[in-house]
Amino acid sequence: MPTLKPPNLQNKIIIQITDTHLMDQPETEFVQINPEQNFHAVIDDLLQRFPHIDALIHTGDLAQIANPETYTRYQNYMQKLGIPFFQIPGNHDDLAHFPFHTPDPIPTVIELGEWSIILLNSAVQGQTDGWIQTEQLQHLKQILEQQLDKNIILACHHHPFAMKSHWIDQHKLKNTEEFIHILEHFKHIKAVIYGHVHQDSKHVWNGISFLSTPATCVQFKPLSHNFALDDMAPGYRYLQLKENGEFETEVFRLKNFSQKIMQEISGY
Ligand SMILES: [Zn+2]
Image 1 (cartoon, rainbow, N blue to C red):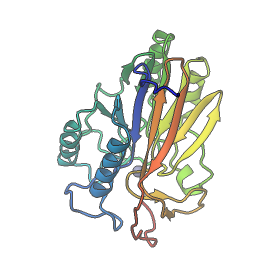
Image 2: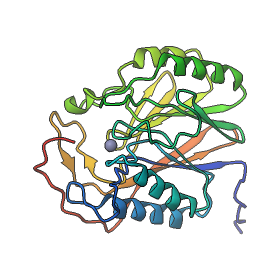
Image 3: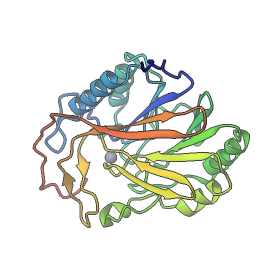
């Protein structure tokens, strides 16, 4: 008789959501979809699938209309879920209004048992592409040195490596060299998670998994030279962080989801 294994409470479950692109009013549409509705549908889906979540991490482009009201509405909604939640800004966010957990450029560290998740700000006010400030990278190096006994996940908004999609690669993280020069000294970094590219991808560098995640709003077509939307459903990333330093990850998308995407829009 197979015995039912009790859940291992030492394993931590984190969910990454990204690119909600919320408007200032919940009913307002953006490229013919309602970002608020999509975002809520994603949250409903992940709550149903995962009865226990240790942290929800939003990797940026929280707002399309980056007003204080948008951020307040988001925080009020998330607070009601009763799950610890964290967010970092994307290029569409306004750094002046963004609800940082630690004063920028100090990275936020989320400690979960044997694991630490370090949140970085790669957004630069008024720019679409990304840059992690030197001062922030110095903080990161110190934290990594202090946390040698932990397994590390890093999170930022912009993609550090090219996606082979010409238009979106113009908007990547621009100081990847400087960033990975710090990472290459450490063996305890397991993954870097990000948004921005509105698609699922995986790239391995130096034993570290670099993972992008579908947006909760519209999807971008992979490997496209010019800007193009994809008709894939919105999604999110699940990560199970194990006590032994290994992790499992999977992307889930909404089922029975149909929407007419506006193919004619020329950029974002
Ligand atoms: Zn975005």
